[in-house]
Image (cartoon, rainbow, N blue to C red; front, side, top):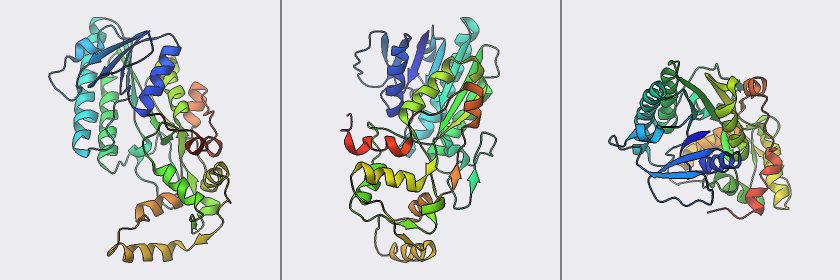
Length: 320
């Protein structure tokens, strides 16, 4: 098939590009800057998706599937322009081209951030959970999802939306997991409250995300559906995996959550500490994202065991 891919230079998009080419698809890549690739069936188009003057119809023309993986994770001022405005223009172009040429399937890469941040209490998040995005990135991605669903009401336009949790892999640019691993390696990590026995780590490997995107793009039962994707495990399993990968002792110590929160609140008035209320929230979270729907609908189960795969962050050199 002929596929349009946005965000091909990104962490997830680059993995998807390799998977598409390996499967024999011809891919049109949209990029603002130069793009070099060793794949033969890749057409590179220089275009700025945030520019209203960009010819979106020419980008979409001839394509049967569109993967919208473009995302801005750092510059909040650019998020609405790319996530909402550009997606809206892309959807409009897809509808026009689909009506004139042939049906087009639109795959939107989103985030479980659409459901809101993790909380201390046990929370099971499914695709039917009420959306409650907090933060510019989460809010703009969720708005984009709604645009996709509205655009998909046409008989010529179908869609699938994939909402992964925290995605990791060797080439990730976010260093939060590596920083956590350093704390474990130095013997400075401690559990907070009851986290050692009941906190949940919500991660999924980038290769599993690419596999799920492929199913969203080409499996007929994926049409018109939203899928969450995570490979949850106990936080203690993740931490133990980090310790084992670096050949150090597994952390065992715990501190009172209430006491730590009080200390952090007071200390942060005078100092800039690495421990923040948000990080405490993440380390005591009991939120889970079951993958029941994508398993039952598409037969997909993540292959990369998180506590085992986390070792690649400490044993492999990042790909730049």
